[in-house]
Image (cartoon, rainbow, N blue to C red; front, side):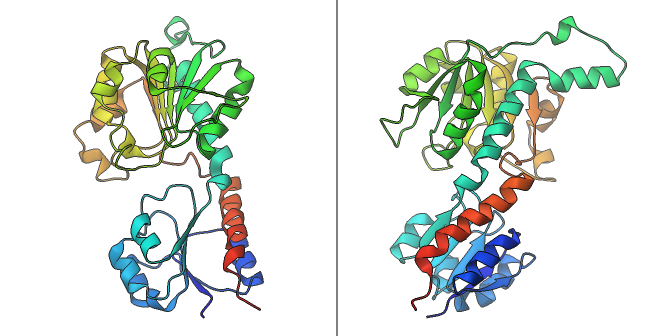
Length: 311
């Protein structure tokens, strides 16, 4: 049985070191195109990807010897999980590796929104000193609603624990997860109680376009909204309309329905988005720090243990 791994994206060298120590051979080809990868994938037992490569039915059928796929990150939406399971392919991801990065980034977005960091900075650079216009809000005593309480949601809750907030969380796929950082509640309670809403869910058929105008309509209080999960979980047009209506006080978006240029600039909502002083944007980097770059690879390398060659 072959124990070779094709790596089609940038990962930290520590992954290769750990894999080799366990008896694997690694072919590191971070600049390979998807078409080029398909020409050779049938010769490999393992595949390591990030976001540029979609492991769909076609890819799986071509990869006759594939035993496992490692996703360098948390999200698995670029893998056909059901078909991979049908073919006996094990899937590995590494949410433990970037959960701290995501939690910290979400807190940073929230603080920036509540204290007008982006508009205040822009005004001062333009020669305008506006104290009253940039009066901020305090986190203490507010209710933070978290949708999705996996590694990322719990990390965010943990980072918030020193701010003396009331943190509540809803997760459709688990129960009994209340801990010292968050209290499990229903979606109805999230909608009723939240001053802040933060998404930490994977992209699935159920979470696709979850945050819509209808969904936001039901919130009882104006909220600050944070999305560091997947762009397609929240409709940008709905978020912008809610900002205009005063239902969203500010939005911190690390992810968008459409990402990268030139496609992003072609969206009907982009001009309004970039001109809004109530939106802070980052380019899908919440989980991408210098530290997480290594930790993600360490987590993946550690999970290769089950695939070690028989002695």
